[in-house]
Image (cartoon, rainbow over all chains, first blue to last red; front, side, top):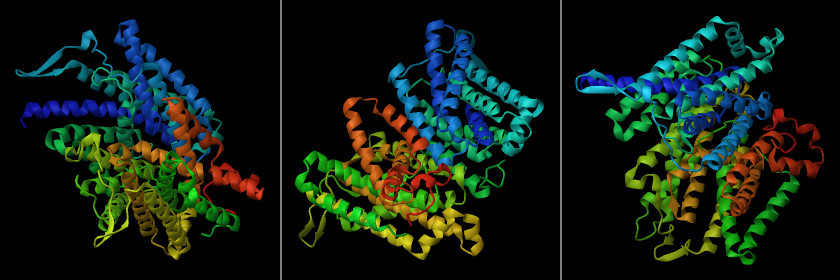
Length: 291
Length: 333
């Protein structure tokens, strides 16, 4: 493997890592703050991709489609939070698992009813469709760089919101002690609604920007959900920083696994997870007492 | 773990009914009952984990499918293999996988455990998905059911559907008695103690890790038995058998039937298979209805069908229907 091939793989790995981070940060936030294990998170990713496919067809503009699609997903997630998830706050994990599993079944079938079982593709928007030259004989698609840049901006934005704003303070406090935050007069239900819809919006947004590079197909959320679980477990449940590190590790391990160990590529990720768990059962940035 | 007197009589009655069923039921329904019984064994094995050890495994389908794959792999295209070695081999393969996966997973608790078992099961799934030599995503066929012969005498001809029916029924009853016996042993007391309060059990001096690990392995092996029977029954195996949808469905079946009862999951399997069979006739989108049903069970029926039956039998369930403690062994034991 020479240097340019190596560089391309690093870029691919980082791009996939950012995508994974966007999905898994929502998952880890929802668990860390609300104590909810949300299996339906991958379904939001899938719905994001389908909505952008649909709106892109109607409006003819990818960015308008995203701009309109995200609010739709926020409304959908708020409805789901209000009518299903909010019943789970006092229940155990088994109950959450079942209910969100039921949600997956419903959302997957809803997708089949609306869009059918065909595979679709979303064209890369004109302005980002070019390729950038790395060396004289190696180039790289601009759109993939765009995903990384957007991921980086969102990660930075999340860092600022969580570390520097009042909402972020409440979110951090809520992650470490929910009851205490409630006692201090914070409307925790409102915080939960916001966190859940932000998580869903992040998942849907990743589905939207991933649509042009992967195709849009039924059940596309399942694969990413499971990998996001791995990311969250590696990083430590509830930790955004952990999710970032975990996503980058998995992103790079996946791309390099495909090049170096093509036969075992899909297992590399899980082997990595097993290794990290032996070393730190609570994940890289997890708290030692898990519940 | 002891069944209460009415439950014992009802179970005996159920076994008798199952024993005479092939003589009265149509072939189609007999086949349906075989499916229910196999799924019942599978669900019962998960109940040992969720309902008695307090480990919510979301990767149980891996052990079910793995044993099925082993049987399909060792069976040549021209004849069946002997059950005497293929059954232990398949079950041991599942047990070995459970030992490895459990060794990593059991040291974690709660939500970590759920996610890790899921991730490992997916790893097994992807392995078979990409294993071209074993059919990849199309899976494999089993052309001949295992043979049960000593010398040249055929003891059981499993190709005969009725013989196979009784073999499955026997396996179900044996599994139930075995797990019941296990739970009555000191080992069973300890794992139930772990479910009730792990720190306290550890404080008394039990190495809880090993108890949970062994429980995980036994459950995996029992799931393997179910997988072996399933492949013998259907004659096919594909990665779909190991997929996480299967793991999700079997959790649902256990809860639907009633956690921590052993026979409850079999009732759950009955309800599920009959519902699936009926709904599939009406609409190809039966999973939508199933999804709604899953949500309703999660919200309103945390004790499952057996919890409902208990309320009717004892008329005292009202104070026990609190959703907080639905996994506990209350008046039933």
